[in-house]
Structure formats: C-alpha cells, structure tokens
Image 1 (cartoon, rainbow, N blue to C red):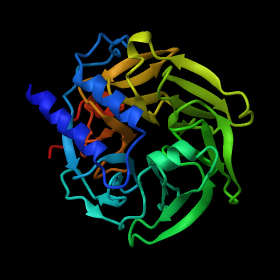
Image 2 (cartoon, helix red, strand yellow):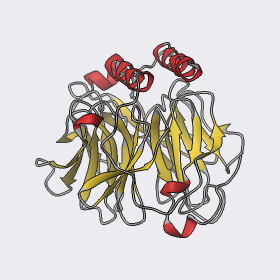
Image 3 (tube, one colour):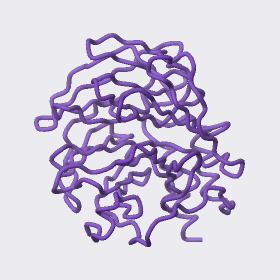
Length: 331
C-alpha cells in the first residue's frame, strides 16, 4: 500500500505540472502500468554475473527527462517542469542549476567540443502538433557558463536527441511520427524519417544506422539506414505482455548493443542478437540511461539511469565487463 501511495503522488505531480505535461494518454498508461499488479514480462534476464543492486547517486527535485556525461565525468540533466539544465560534478554531489528555465525538457547530448545540445518542446502541445507545425528549437549550452544559444530551429517537439560521429543530430517527436535531422552545416529536416510515436534514439558507432524506439501501440525498436530514411526497418518487437511497458530512453553499450529504459515495466532491456533481455528490474518510471566517461566522477563503463521521481541511479548490472567487479559509487 505504501508503494501505491508514493507512486500515486508521483502520478499526481506529473499531471499537475505547471506548464508542461506529457500527452495525457501516455501519463495515464504509465501510471496504470505501475499501479496495477505487474504482469509477467516476456523479456528474460540477460546472462551475466551476479552484480550489486542499483545505487542512488544523485537526486533532483524535478522530473529528470534526460542525462548525459561529458569526458570529464560530469553529468548533465534536463529538468522537465522547471526547464533547467543541471550539472552534477560527481556521484553524491549536489546538482547545480546551469541555466534558468530555457524549456530544456527534452533530450540532451554532449558534443565533441564539450558543449551541450538540448531539446525543447517536449510538452503536450508541441509534441502533438510537431509533425504539422515544427516550431521547436535545439539549444547549444556552454557547460561552464550556462550560456545558451539556438543551434537549430524548425523541429517538432523534441523528446529524444542523438548525435552521430560526423556531427549530424537526430531528434524524435513522441506525439507524432517525425524523426528530425540537422546536418553539421545547419540544414534542418523536421521529417527526415517516420516512425509512429518515436521516443528514444541513438546512432550506431559507424553512423550508418539510426535506432529509434516506438513507445506505444506496438512497442519495438527500429533501424533506419542513414542513407535510406524512407525505409525504416522494424528490428525487434516487444512481446505482447509488454504492450504497456512504455519503453523510453535509449543508449548503446561498448559493443554497440542498444539498451532501453522502460516506464511501466520498470526494466532496463538490452538487445542481444535478435531478442530483448532484461538487465535490471524494479526501476519504475525510468526516462533515460547513459554510460559514464573519463576516469573520475560518473566514470567510463558505468551505467546510469534517470527517472520521473528525479532520482538517478548507477546500475551495476549494466556496467561494461571491466567495471562489474568494482563497487558502485555510494551516495
């Protein structure tokens, strides 16, 4: 009963957000999936050595929509309701507001030069109208000063953001179908490709494939050839028992395998071969997962997860093999 009460409050907070809320159907489906007795999920456990349980390493008093880590091991987070970007210098450190309210309620990635690209317009209005009226911006944020400028405009409401090796940026609009694309020379195509309810997004290490999560109706993972965006290919489908799992954020491990955070299933999935398996369970309302970088702070090889409740966890079960024997950073 205590768990239901806590999650009920989380649902209420999400629905009462001052200015921003996800499409109501998504919020209600997520809440229903968590509050109801959990069904037997089809994704089996991944084969891996036993590891420590998740450990909380940071906490924001907001819905954390997305996280990314720079080469210095510093984490950056987008706050859904306040629209801020936060910097967290190391596990256990107090999050520092890097910006004011800039509408930073979508994805975030770190460029090769260390500056941040942040998506805006991930609210119900811009998300649901983004296909027809692409009015949202991709912002460039300095990780030291917090200075903000517009990197690109004319995109659908931006949920996911992914960066290709050549500097091309891809975005998703979860309330529609559009996958946006911004080339390094600034050309914007708000409908570069089409996938229903696209959410998490990532690019293969060689830049030839764009991976996109379809989050509702028939959850699954698509591969879009970078040179043939008109023909997205459904790669892996979630099982019927995971129809309400609400997969969200997407990242790749050191082997190039996609990992997927889920809202209602409370699981982190990984692609192994042509199937999904479960890396970790019990992390409900997850929004994004990402790997650390560098030799300090949120360091290389360690997997981190953000969520609607503002809590960020290290997930040892998803760590790269050479990090699994080390204890997670305690808060």
